[in-house]
Length: 465
Image (cartoon, rainbow, N blue to C red; front, top):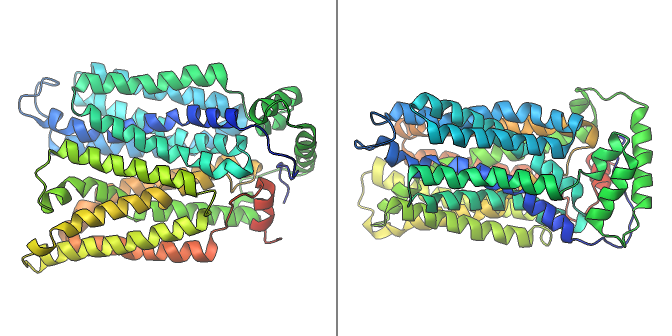
């Protein structure tokens, strides 16, 4: 299995530009967060009888479609984004993906009817799916092994920051929410265009050696010896040129096949853990716990918990490793969902008085969100940027991201049906069992990548330790 990653054990380069580039790229995740959370504060505005947005309030069916079309668009955006990033470069595609977000917020601002909102949400989804694939890919290629995990978690960290910003904007108006959200894709475009060079790996792939050297010096610092790294990248490129990469390499190559299984499995367990259902139900859980807080304040509290927990993951992922955080995350999430399911089973199915354990749903949700944000939330996105060899990275990333958003769509639509059919308690127990299976999946199949050069990861995926 040929790769184009270097193995030199030189002194590490300067890290400032790597951090700066990761932060700027992660502004795209803020844009995603604002789009994802937009329906939360906007629902009462659109559904209110005295709404000034349209001539009549939006119905439940219309609002459900407004919410779900983003996930549909994300599937369509994810599939080609990785391929296009391989063909045209990571930087041009990140820049191009800013435009769907800008267009969508403009459509929301001028929307005379729900049809404009349908179109805007689908277009937002295209940008969302594309960013979810290309930004982790970009960060994974610019980061040194020692900080790749930390920088990789920036994607989820900035995504939840975007969600929290929108929750706060819920205290304002329809127009203010859209205008502030419009700022982030524009800011990303300006900063990324002006300050951030293409990755050296892509530049070497297309034969731009001088630009690749300039890129490496930018990301590693002027004192870093880039010649060995460039030489090894070129050697790997020469080896690759002797074979033609085809789509089937994803499952015929042992390393690619294992990387694909790991990535798809992590995406599957991330979404089937029930995160969207728990977030959707969080306001109701606060009420069940006896809270009299405004739903917007409840959402802000949930968002703050996510930010703090994801920030903890940023610190721990390159210290404890990916596997331990994933297993700990899934296992504790399973316990929290078990207790959450117990509360609703006693309350709704057995119709018992649960006043004595009214604290349980709130405690369970907080623990669940903390553990999700420390492991199952950020790590799958980070690992798709470091598991795949460059010759298949674009296609593989597109498949993994498309699966994630397809499952998000299914879980969001099916939660209400499952709750009414099985009961809310049993539905949460189902998610709990899935989290336990996810723990076992990580233990048996997920490769630890902490601190390893990208070429070493490929060697271990192929079973040649």
